[in-house]
Length: 332
Image (tube, rainbow, N blue to C red; front, top):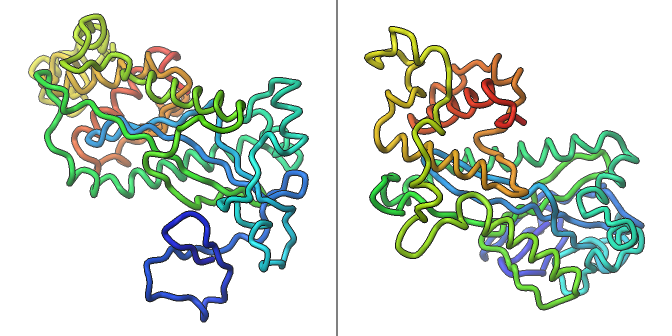
Protein backbone atom coordinates (compact mmCIF):
# COMPACT_ATOMS: atom_id res chain seq x y z
CA UNK A 1 0.00 0.00 0.00
CA UNK A 2 1.43 3.39 -1.01
CA UNK A 3 0.21 6.68 0.40
CA UNK A 4 1.16 10.28 -0.18
CA UNK A 5 2.10 12.51 2.73
CA UNK A 6 -1.35 14.13 2.63
CA UNK A 7 -4.67 12.58 3.60
CA UNK A 8 -6.07 10.20 1.06
CA UNK A 9 -4.24 9.08 -2.06
CA UNK A 10 -3.93 5.48 -0.88
CA UNK A 11 -3.09 3.06 -3.68
CA UNK A 12 -2.73 -0.71 -3.62
CA UNK A 13 0.25 -1.72 -5.77
CA UNK A 14 2.53 -4.63 -6.42
CA UNK A 15 5.98 -4.01 -4.91
CA UNK A 16 7.53 -3.78 -8.37
CA UNK A 17 5.20 -0.89 -9.27
CA UNK A 18 5.97 1.31 -6.25
CA UNK A 19 7.07 4.89 -6.92
CA UNK A 20 10.05 5.54 -4.63
CA UNK A 21 11.14 8.85 -6.18
CA UNK A 22 8.73 11.18 -4.38
CA UNK A 23 8.02 11.49 -0.61
CA UNK A 24 5.71 8.63 0.21
CA UNK A 25 4.61 6.14 2.85
CA UNK A 26 4.70 2.42 2.08
CA UNK A 27 2.99 -0.18 4.24
CA UNK A 28 2.03 -3.80 3.96
CA UNK A 29 -1.65 -4.07 3.07
CA UNK A 30 -3.72 -6.06 5.57
CA UNK A 31 -6.13 -7.99 3.35
CA UNK A 32 -8.16 -9.63 6.15
CA UNK A 33 -9.48 -6.74 8.23
CA UNK A 34 -11.99 -7.23 11.01
CA UNK A 35 -15.33 -6.05 9.61
CA UNK A 36 -18.37 -4.59 11.33
CA UNK A 37 -21.51 -4.94 9.22
CA UNK A 38 -19.15 -5.57 6.31
CA UNK A 39 -17.23 -2.31 6.72
CA UNK A 40 -13.51 -1.96 7.28
CA UNK A 41 -12.52 0.48 10.04
CA UNK A 42 -9.62 1.82 12.00
CA UNK A 43 -9.51 2.94 15.61
CA UNK A 44 -7.52 5.87 16.94
CA UNK A 45 -6.01 5.66 20.42
CA UNK A 46 -5.00 8.89 22.15
CA UNK A 47 -1.62 9.06 23.90
CA UNK A 48 -0.37 11.72 26.31
CA UNK A 49 3.39 11.99 26.68
CA UNK A 50 4.29 13.88 29.87
CA UNK A 51 8.03 13.28 30.22
CA UNK A 52 10.98 12.19 28.09
CA UNK A 53 13.66 11.49 30.69
CA UNK A 54 12.31 9.65 32.53
CA UNK A 55 9.84 8.40 29.94
CA UNK A 56 6.24 8.68 31.15
CA UNK A 57 3.23 8.24 28.89
CA UNK A 58 -0.48 7.50 29.21
CA UNK A 59 -3.24 6.02 27.06
CA UNK A 60 -6.79 7.36 27.10
CA UNK A 61 -8.47 4.11 28.06
CA UNK A 62 -12.11 5.20 27.95
CA UNK A 63 -12.72 5.87 24.25
CA UNK A 64 -11.27 5.72 20.73
CA UNK A 65 -11.91 7.40 17.42
CA UNK A 66 -13.64 5.23 14.80
CA UNK A 67 -13.55 5.68 11.04
CA UNK A 68 -15.20 3.33 8.58
CA UNK A 69 -14.82 2.84 4.84
CA UNK A 70 -17.39 4.57 2.65
CA UNK A 71 -18.57 1.25 1.18
CA UNK A 72 -18.57 -2.35 2.34
CA UNK A 73 -15.21 -4.06 2.02
CA UNK A 74 -14.81 -6.52 -0.85
CA UNK A 75 -11.77 -8.77 -0.60
CA UNK A 76 -9.65 -8.48 -3.74
CA UNK A 77 -11.43 -5.38 -5.06
CA UNK A 78 -8.83 -2.63 -4.81
CA UNK A 79 -10.14 -0.40 -7.58
CA UNK A 80 -12.72 1.42 -5.46
CA UNK A 81 -10.77 3.10 -2.66
CA UNK A 82 -13.89 3.81 -0.61
CA UNK A 83 -14.12 0.11 0.28
CA UNK A 84 -10.68 -0.11 1.92
CA UNK A 85 -9.53 3.45 2.64
CA UNK A 86 -10.85 4.97 5.86
CA UNK A 87 -8.97 8.25 5.40
CA UNK A 88 -10.69 9.63 2.33
CA UNK A 89 -13.57 12.09 2.26
CA UNK A 90 -16.20 9.41 1.68
CA UNK A 91 -15.48 7.59 4.94
CA UNK A 92 -18.22 6.96 7.49
CA UNK A 93 -18.15 7.70 11.20
CA UNK A 94 -19.51 5.58 14.04
CA UNK A 95 -22.98 7.12 13.92
CA UNK A 96 -23.41 5.86 10.34
CA UNK A 97 -23.13 2.16 11.29
CA UNK A 98 -26.42 0.86 12.68
CA UNK A 99 -25.13 -1.74 15.16
CA UNK A 100 -22.51 0.69 16.48
CA UNK A 101 -24.94 3.57 16.81
CA UNK A 102 -27.55 1.40 18.56
CA UNK A 103 -25.08 0.35 21.24
CA UNK A 104 -23.77 3.88 21.64
CA UNK A 105 -27.10 5.70 21.68
CA UNK A 106 -29.68 3.25 23.03
CA UNK A 107 -27.61 1.18 25.43
CA UNK A 108 -24.94 3.80 26.26
CA UNK A 109 -22.17 1.24 25.84
CA UNK A 110 -19.43 3.68 24.92
CA UNK A 111 -17.03 3.01 22.05
CA UNK A 112 -14.68 0.68 23.92
CA UNK A 113 -17.44 -1.60 25.19
CA UNK A 114 -19.12 -1.54 21.78
CA UNK A 115 -15.94 -2.68 20.04
CA UNK A 116 -15.28 -5.30 22.71
CA UNK A 117 -18.77 -6.70 22.13
CA UNK A 118 -17.90 -7.22 18.45
CA UNK A 119 -14.40 -8.54 19.20
CA UNK A 120 -15.83 -11.01 21.69
CA UNK A 121 -17.49 -12.83 18.81
CA UNK A 122 -13.99 -13.78 17.61
CA UNK A 123 -12.40 -14.54 20.95
CA UNK A 124 -11.08 -12.79 24.05
CA UNK A 125 -11.35 -9.05 23.42
CA UNK A 126 -8.69 -8.30 26.06
CA UNK A 127 -5.95 -9.46 23.67
CA UNK A 128 -6.67 -6.44 21.47
CA UNK A 129 -6.11 -4.05 24.37
CA UNK A 130 -2.92 -5.87 25.36
CA UNK A 131 -1.49 -5.65 21.84
CA UNK A 132 -2.31 -1.94 21.59
CA UNK A 133 -0.51 -1.19 24.85
CA UNK A 134 2.51 -3.22 23.74
CA UNK A 135 2.63 -1.48 20.34
CA UNK A 136 2.46 2.00 21.87
CA UNK A 137 5.11 1.08 24.44
CA UNK A 138 7.43 -0.27 21.75
CA UNK A 139 7.12 2.92 19.69
CA UNK A 140 7.84 5.16 22.69
CA UNK A 141 10.86 3.14 23.82
CA UNK A 142 12.23 3.00 20.27
CA UNK A 143 11.93 6.77 19.84
CA UNK A 144 13.01 7.68 23.37
CA UNK A 145 16.63 8.47 22.51
CA UNK A 146 15.82 10.73 19.52
CA UNK A 147 13.30 12.58 21.69
CA UNK A 148 15.89 13.06 24.43
CA UNK A 149 18.20 14.81 21.98
CA UNK A 150 15.60 17.57 21.67
CA UNK A 151 15.19 17.92 25.40
CA UNK A 152 16.28 21.37 26.62
CA UNK A 153 16.97 20.78 30.29
CA UNK A 154 16.27 18.37 33.12
CA UNK A 155 13.29 19.01 35.40
CA UNK A 156 14.05 21.09 38.48
CA UNK A 157 12.10 22.80 41.20
CA UNK A 158 12.89 26.32 40.01
CA UNK A 159 11.12 26.33 36.65
CA UNK A 160 8.54 24.50 34.55
CA UNK A 161 10.89 23.22 31.86
CA UNK A 162 10.41 19.71 33.17
CA UNK A 163 6.64 19.95 32.71
CA UNK A 164 5.25 19.53 29.22
CA UNK A 165 2.89 17.31 27.35
CA UNK A 166 2.38 16.05 23.83
CA UNK A 167 -0.87 14.55 22.60
CA UNK A 168 -0.72 12.07 19.76
CA UNK A 169 -3.10 9.58 18.19
CA UNK A 170 -2.06 6.09 17.14
CA UNK A 171 -4.33 4.60 14.47
CA UNK A 172 -4.75 0.84 14.50
CA UNK A 173 -6.33 -1.68 12.17
CA UNK A 174 -7.62 -4.96 13.61
CA UNK A 175 -7.55 -8.09 11.46
CA UNK A 176 -10.10 -10.90 11.59
CA UNK A 177 -7.84 -12.90 13.92
CA UNK A 178 -7.84 -9.98 16.40
CA UNK A 179 -4.30 -9.12 15.42
CA UNK A 180 -3.43 -5.43 15.90
CA UNK A 181 -1.59 -3.39 13.24
CA UNK A 182 -0.26 0.11 13.87
CA UNK A 183 -0.88 2.04 10.66
CA UNK A 184 -0.17 5.66 11.53
CA UNK A 185 0.86 8.04 14.31
CA UNK A 186 -0.68 11.51 14.22
CA UNK A 187 1.13 14.21 16.16
CA UNK A 188 -1.16 16.93 17.54
CA UNK A 189 -4.35 15.29 16.21
CA UNK A 190 -7.39 17.34 15.28
CA UNK A 191 -9.69 17.88 18.28
CA UNK A 192 -12.07 20.35 16.65
CA UNK A 193 -15.73 19.58 17.33
CA UNK A 194 -17.47 21.15 14.35
CA UNK A 195 -19.11 18.01 12.95
CA UNK A 196 -21.81 15.60 14.12
CA UNK A 197 -23.01 16.14 17.74
CA UNK A 198 -21.74 12.70 18.75
CA UNK A 199 -18.27 13.62 17.51
CA UNK A 200 -18.43 16.85 19.48
CA UNK A 201 -19.16 14.95 22.70
CA UNK A 202 -16.43 12.46 21.90
CA UNK A 203 -13.80 15.13 21.31
CA UNK A 204 -14.85 17.04 24.42
CA UNK A 205 -14.25 13.83 26.37
CA UNK A 206 -10.82 13.43 24.76
CA UNK A 207 -9.91 17.04 25.45
CA UNK A 208 -11.12 16.96 29.05
CA UNK A 209 -9.07 13.88 29.89
CA UNK A 210 -5.94 14.78 27.93
CA UNK A 211 -5.80 18.42 29.03
CA UNK A 212 -7.14 18.04 32.56
CA UNK A 213 -5.47 14.73 33.27
CA UNK A 214 -2.00 14.23 34.72
CA UNK A 215 -1.05 17.47 36.48
CA UNK A 216 -2.09 19.61 33.51
CA UNK A 217 -4.91 21.29 35.42
CA UNK A 218 -2.28 22.52 37.87
CA UNK A 219 0.09 24.12 35.39
CA UNK A 220 -0.32 27.88 35.25
CA UNK A 221 1.38 30.61 33.25
CA UNK A 222 3.81 31.61 35.99
CA UNK A 223 4.26 28.36 37.85
CA UNK A 224 2.59 25.51 39.65
CA UNK A 225 -0.36 26.11 41.92
CA UNK A 226 0.55 26.00 45.59
CA UNK A 227 -2.30 23.56 46.16
CA UNK A 228 -0.78 20.94 43.88
CA UNK A 229 2.85 19.98 43.30
CA UNK A 230 4.43 22.40 45.73
CA UNK A 231 2.09 21.22 48.48
CA UNK A 232 3.15 17.59 48.16
CA UNK A 233 5.17 16.37 51.09
CA UNK A 234 8.23 14.16 50.76
CA UNK A 235 6.30 11.64 52.85
CA UNK A 236 3.69 11.47 50.07
CA UNK A 237 6.21 10.02 47.64
CA UNK A 238 7.89 7.76 50.19
CA UNK A 239 7.82 4.23 48.79
CA UNK A 240 7.69 2.83 52.31
CA UNK A 241 9.98 -0.13 51.67
CA UNK A 242 11.77 -1.76 54.57
CA UNK A 243 15.23 -1.44 53.01
CA UNK A 244 15.11 2.33 53.47
CA UNK A 245 15.12 1.87 57.24
CA UNK A 246 17.98 -0.63 57.30
CA UNK A 247 21.51 0.28 58.30
CA UNK A 248 22.85 -0.23 54.76
CA UNK A 249 20.81 2.72 53.48
CA UNK A 250 21.87 5.16 56.17
CA UNK A 251 24.65 6.37 53.88
CA UNK A 252 22.73 5.55 50.67
CA UNK A 253 25.51 3.44 49.23
CA UNK A 254 23.49 0.43 48.09
CA UNK A 255 21.67 0.23 44.74
CA UNK A 256 18.38 -0.62 46.46
CA UNK A 257 18.52 2.66 48.37
CA UNK A 258 17.94 4.80 45.27
CA UNK A 259 14.16 4.91 45.79
CA UNK A 260 14.47 5.99 49.43
CA UNK A 261 13.50 9.65 49.60
CA UNK A 262 16.37 10.58 51.92
CA UNK A 263 18.77 9.19 49.27
CA UNK A 264 17.24 11.14 46.37
CA UNK A 265 18.69 14.33 44.96
CA UNK A 266 16.58 17.48 44.91
CA UNK A 267 15.98 16.92 41.18
CA UNK A 268 14.96 13.29 41.74
CA UNK A 269 12.45 14.26 44.44
CA UNK A 270 10.91 16.78 42.06
CA UNK A 271 10.80 14.17 39.27
CA UNK A 272 9.04 11.62 41.49
CA UNK A 273 6.60 14.27 42.73
CA UNK A 274 5.60 14.83 39.10
CA UNK A 275 5.02 11.09 38.65
CA UNK A 276 2.97 11.01 41.87
CA UNK A 277 0.82 13.99 40.89
CA UNK A 278 0.19 12.58 37.43
CA UNK A 279 -0.98 9.27 38.83
CA UNK A 280 -3.51 10.73 41.26
CA UNK A 281 -4.85 13.19 38.65
CA UNK A 282 -4.93 10.86 35.66
CA UNK A 283 -8.71 10.81 35.06
CA UNK A 284 -9.40 8.09 32.41
CA UNK A 285 -5.76 7.92 31.38
CA UNK A 286 -3.82 4.75 32.12
CA UNK A 287 -0.05 4.63 32.31
CA UNK A 288 1.51 2.83 29.36
CA UNK A 289 5.11 3.59 30.36
CA UNK A 290 6.38 2.70 32.87
CA UNK A 291 3.90 -0.11 32.38
CA UNK A 292 1.33 -0.76 35.08
CA UNK A 293 1.76 -4.09 36.88
CA UNK A 294 -0.19 -6.35 39.18
CA UNK A 295 1.26 -6.67 42.67
CA UNK A 296 2.49 -10.17 41.83
CA UNK A 297 4.26 -8.88 38.72
CA UNK A 298 5.87 -6.07 40.73
CA UNK A 299 7.10 -8.48 43.42
CA UNK A 300 8.60 -10.96 40.95
CA UNK A 301 9.97 -8.41 38.45
CA UNK A 302 13.59 -8.99 37.43
CA UNK A 303 15.15 -5.53 37.47
CA UNK A 304 18.17 -6.75 35.51
CA UNK A 305 15.93 -6.08 32.49
CA UNK A 306 16.31 -2.37 33.27
CA UNK A 307 20.11 -2.32 33.43
CA UNK A 308 20.47 -0.51 30.09
CA UNK A 309 17.93 2.18 30.88
CA UNK A 310 18.79 5.73 31.92
CA UNK A 311 19.24 6.48 35.62
CA UNK A 312 15.96 8.41 35.70
CA UNK A 313 14.05 5.59 34.00
CA UNK A 314 15.44 2.99 36.38
CA UNK A 315 14.53 5.12 39.39
CA UNK A 316 11.02 5.87 38.18
CA UNK A 317 10.25 2.27 37.28
CA UNK A 318 11.59 1.00 40.62
CA UNK A 319 9.57 3.63 42.49
CA UNK A 320 6.30 2.70 40.74
CA UNK A 321 6.92 -0.99 41.49
CA UNK A 322 7.61 -0.25 45.14
CA UNK A 323 4.43 1.84 45.43
CA UNK A 324 2.45 -1.01 43.87
CA UNK A 325 3.90 -3.57 46.28
CA UNK A 326 2.96 -1.35 49.22
CA UNK A 327 -0.50 -0.26 48.03
CA UNK A 328 -2.76 -1.86 45.39
CA UNK A 329 -3.96 1.62 44.39
CA UNK A 330 -0.71 1.89 42.42
CA UNK A 331 -1.16 -1.47 40.67
CA UNK A 332 -2.90 -2.49 37.48
